[in-house]
Length: 88
Image 1: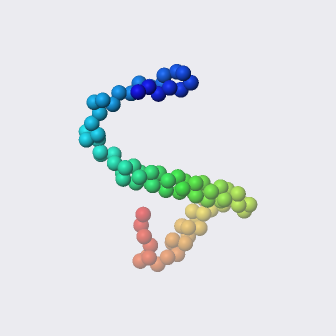
Image 2: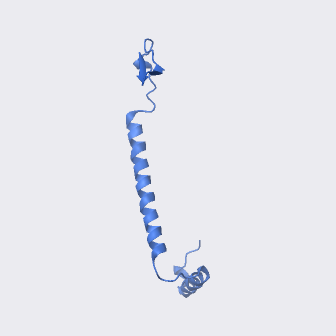
Image 3: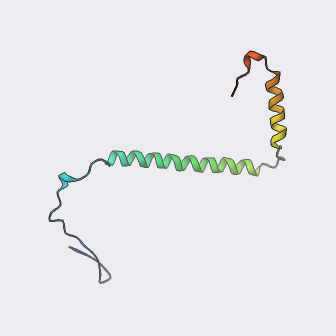
């Protein structure tokens, strides 16, 4: 059987020796479906994350330098009782 596209042969197919029982079933439809679900979930998460990042960038408040944030956090941690502090 030949597949033609605008008078030019695209492919010559011969399935006379094909045996469907010899098909590799390790990549089943169920596995592909799960992979597609995971890909869609990852794409949706990436889209959501990009929107969250852009929303944060668009906030008109001035940024706080990291050194200031860390100094405040260090002071808050130091103010905790010794038993409530967790070590990283």
